[in-house]
Amino acid sequence: MLSSPTSDLVLAVRLAPLLRGDLDLISIARSAGILLAAYLTCLCVYRYFFHPLAGFPGPRLAPFNNALWFWTLLKGRAPWVNHSWHKRYGPVVRIGVNHLSFSTHAAQKTIYGFGTKEVPSFTKDPEFSTPEVDNTVNIIVEVDKAEHARMRRMLSYAFSNTNLYSHEDVLTRRTDEMLDRFHGLQEEDGKRGINFVKWSYYVTYDIMGEMCFGDLWDVQTAKQPKGKFHWADVITATTNVNDMLRAICVIPGLFSLVTWYMPKSLQDTIVRHAEYANEYTQARLAMKTERKDFLYHMLSDKNLPRPADSEIASHFQALMLAGSITTATFLPGTLYYLCKHPDKRARLISEIRGRFATAADINARALVADCRYLDAVCQESLRIYPPAGAAHLTRIVPEGGCEIAGHWVPGGTRVSVHPWSVVRDEANYHAPGEFIPERWLPTEPEGQRGDKLETSLPFSSGPRGCLGKNLAYLEMRIILARLFWRYDIDWFDSSVDWERDSMGYTVWKKPDLRFTVKQREDI
Image 1 (cartoon, helix red, strand yellow):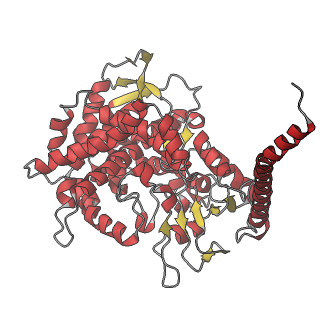
Image 2 (cartoon, rainbow, N blue to C red):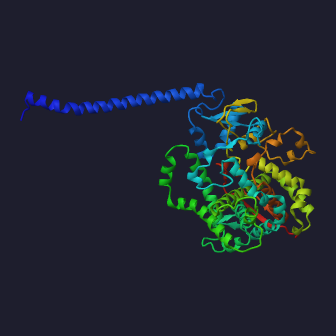
Image 3 (cartoon, one colour):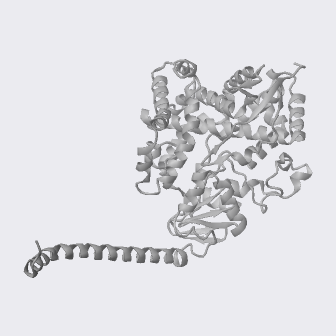
C-alpha cells in the first residue's frame, strides 16, 4: 500500500522528537569530545611550558604523564634507562610530570638526610606505599614520621651490633648447613652445577627466620606441608609481582582490573606470604622461651606501648622479605664478579685461607679487623650491583620548597637519587662499570683516583636508612669467608652476562647463576 502525503507528514511529526533527541546526543558527544581535547591540549601545554618543573631537562614524553617511567619499570629495564637519561641530560632529570631524578652526593644528603632547622627531613613518597598491595603498615611502608620513628626504636636494639654479635652462632651454623649440602653435589634440577641464586635465598631466609622467631623456627618449618623452604619460594615469587602491582596503582581502576584477571594461583601466592607471617607470629607469641630473638626485643622496651599482634606480624612480613632478599642479591652478584675477575678471586681466597687455619677460627670480629680485601670486595659488590639499586627511593619535597644540589625545587615535588645511576656516573667513579675492589683501599693506586665513594649508599641513609645494614654486612662477611675457605668454585659458563640478564624492579629479578664447587683437598 502506497503512503499518502498526509500519512508521511504525520510520521515525520511523530519521529521529529526522536530524531532531535539523537541529534542532541550527537551534539553533546561532539561537544564533550571538543572540550576533552581542549582540556588535554591545555594540560599538555601547561605541563610542558608552565609547570614548575618545566625548566628541567628530560625525555620529551616525561612532562605529559608518568607512563614513560612506569613502562620502563614494568619492563624491568629501569636502571639502564634511567642511567641513559642522566648520561644524556645531566645530573638532574625530569623523568615524570612531577618527578626529578638526581645523580649527585649533594642531592643524596638533602633528600635522604635528617633535615635542618630551615628544611625538615623529606617525607617518604606515599605513592609506593599502596594499601591495595601492602595491605598493612610496617617499618618499610609507614609514611608518618612519628610512627616510623616509634617502629624504628622498637626494632633498633635487635639490629644493633651488640645483639647481632651475640647471635653469631646462628649465622655460622646456618651457613655451614648450606655448605654441607654442597659437598659432592655436581648437578641440581637436572642441570650442571649449583644454582647460587636459589641457595643464597635459602640460607639468608634460614638466618632471618631464626633471628626473628628463635626456637620456634625449626619446629614451625618442619610442619610446612610444602617443605621447609616454601615460604622462601613464596617471598621470591611475590616480590617482583608486588612491584608491578604497585606501579599500576597510579592509574585509577587498573589495579582492580589486573587483579580481577590475575590467575588464582598467583593471588594465593601473594596472600600466602602474609599468612605465613601471621602463623609464625601467633605460634611464637604462644611459645614460652627464654631465647632473645627479634620478637623478644620488639616487646622488651617498657617505655613503648605494646604493638598489636597484627603490627608485629606485619613487621615480620617486611623483615623476612627485606632481610632475605638483600644478602641473597649480594651473594650471587659477588660470585659473578669475582669469577669474571680470577685475579681478584685469588687475592680474596689468599687472604681468607692465609688468615684462618681452620673454619672454627673464622669469626665476625676477626673478619672486620683483619680481612681488608674481603671488606673491599663487599663494598665494591654493593656499589656495582646494589641490592635495591633498581628502585627510585622517592621522597616528597617539604612545603615551601628547598634547594637540592644547587637547584630550587618546589614543595610537593617527587625527588630521588637513583642508586644505579649515581654509582655508574663517570663524574663519581673512574671506570664505574668495572669491578675494582681496590678502589676501596686508600693505600693502593686504584684507591687514589678520586672516586666519590660516599655516593655508594646501598642501604640508603638518614632517618629511613636500612635498619638491617649491620646484619647484612655480618652475613656477607661470614658466608663469603666460610664459602671460599672451604670450597674451590668453578664458573663453567663464562659466556653468561648475568648483569645484563637481570631485571630491575624495586629489587632485582635474577637469572640462575650456576657454579661447580669442590672441597679443598688440604683440609
